[in-house]
Amino acid sequence: MTRPITALAGIFFAMVTALFLSTQFAMAQDASDIDTSDIPEMSIGNPDAAVTIVEYASFTCPHCASFHAGAYKQLKEDFIDTGKINFVYREVYFDRFGLWAAIVARCGDGAENRYFGIADMLYAEQRDWARQNEPSEIVLRLRRIGKTAGLSDAQLDSCFSDGDNAQKLYARYLQQAEADGVRSTPTFIINGVQHSNMPYDEMKAIIEEGLGS
Image 1 (cartoon, rainbow, N blue to C red):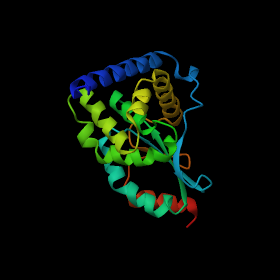
Image 2: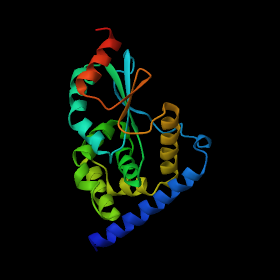
Image 3: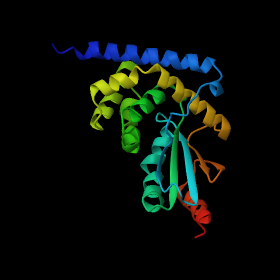
Image 4: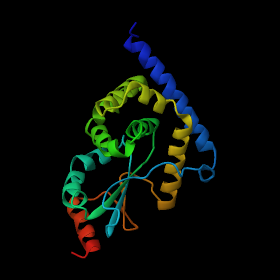
């Protein structure tokens, strides 16, 4: 028998509520004590390029969505797809919903191959899923994005119920953001120098200077 959607929503919400509580436990610990070495860095482009951009962003951040809807597309066309730069994306978790979105993006075997495609969907559909009043509805819409990307219900169930991984993700965020002095999103670290959000022309000029062009 097929379970009603409302019942499924309750089950999913119970999973992610437990997940969020586990991250609260991680917050109470010293993040530096948690081994996050098995959390993969998500990057695209040329890892050997002369310029590396690290973006710190939250999937629930409207300014981040605006960047990915505009400047990022041009950045990808001009510099990432051409192999001129290395682009690293690091998640910031200012709220539980951003963490849940990251869990979907990182879910399943071979997540590195799907990650940026799912990230694009999360930003493109941010207004649809992130602004729902009920957390259970947010979960359902995030799952829908995951399934569109090819994830199964079983994979999503497993990822949403993995409290240990959620703790590691949150600890990794704290470790990296603290090391780089990140306090807002989006923040860009371009060849080790921190920059706040900027027009694409400014970013392009910084990149070209780093490339010596």
